[in-house]
Image (cartoon, rainbow, N blue to C red):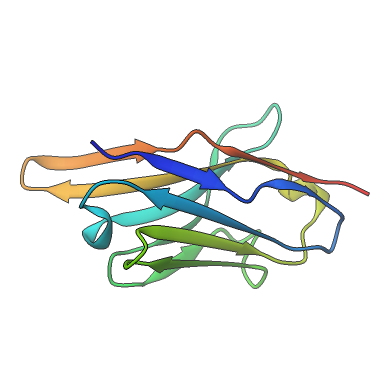
Length: 119
């Protein structure tokens, strides 16, 4: 069983930075794809950034150039560095893990961490 625990959320002023962390339990992390999603108040959940087991990354257009996803397989942790934050970045941020096994793909979600961008 995989458990994901996010941390690093909080209140930041526009233009500020935050780094989110997501620590995964279990032994599947190093060969799993990881991603960050977010859900702003009253809106649908959206993909923010993703990283494959090999380190390839992809970003939503709205965060390109401002956010960076990275992973540390030795620590079973994925990060989201968020710079130049805007009020529209405020949301609950979720970490996800996709484990690809012979029996299929298995998706796991963290509990979410709140990011508030306000002056």
